[in-house]
Length: 331
Image (cartoon, rainbow, N blue to C red; front, side, top):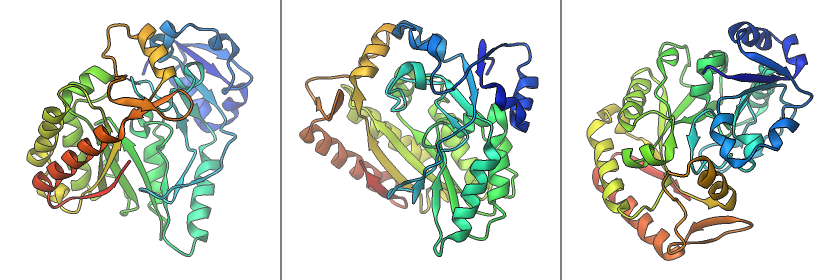
């Protein structure tokens, strides 16, 4: 990443990571702010500025450290070292407020966050799994901060517990030779290549993601796969049949054995539509009123009939082509 401007809380320079970032991006324009969560001059930007705001970097101190219980792939969702992303997936659930969540925010108080993680894991009577990547893509963030390398090595010294994170990027070289001790679960998010090209701007191609998953498996990591989000475009059966067929062909035998798969259907919103129509006027329209319905305030999901049909189709394809794997959940 080569940010045009960096907005930073001055106290971040009191932290080791803050000073490293200041040195790394010394040629960028640095703008002091009072609060990374409320940057007044960005709040007035029109929707069409969304893409440009993706090139900004915000550096702050994370103040929220509350863990949220999770009963899917982890025991807790953990606020960690970043929020947001420099990629531009049209459906991203983090885009609840474009002038807050569009850009990548880095938090320099990583020692505080990891210390709580280690203490919580050590104090538990059972093995806990912590999702540390629900607010950002940590593989992408790692190219800037090395935080993922730093975290995996330290958590690997624990005698119990696991950390996990999903990614859409193949940038795994720095992770391959770490002493992770089996304490890290690496999960790759995939979609048909046509959908990646149309809706997941700035992310790695499908083939590269599959290769990265194989490499992480060979490096001894526990691995998982997300088919997410499932987007019911006009030719979705052909696209997802091709996707699952490609996974069956290109995943290694070792990777497919016991692979846990998460299937997540897309939810969309009024906010997404408003931003995408102005920021990416030539992009695909993800909202389809013929098969979507309202869900909560300003949100859309697929109607029950279409959702049930697609779920049945996907589960059958997975069973037929990835029989050694198992579906952890469908949402």
